[in-house]
Image (cartoon, rainbow, N blue to C red; front, side, top):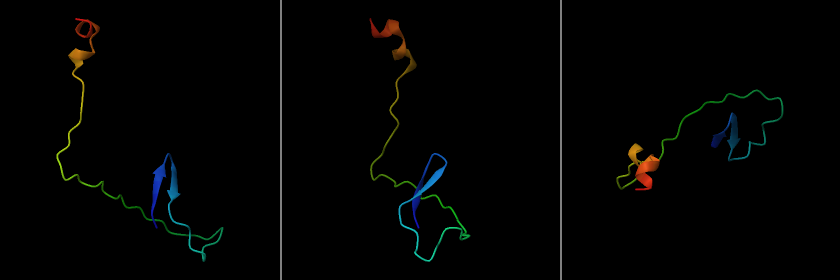
Length: 59
């Protein structure tokens, strides 16, 4: 069964099996699904600190 975490709750993407009722005790296990690797190189974009200075912007 798959789902995702939102805040401190787990949102299931599939419906529960019909044999599970309110009050039933279940065992839950977690596994993190790795994010897909891109077939091309990626990098984080950033802004140099010097370009955040007002004097540099209005030159």
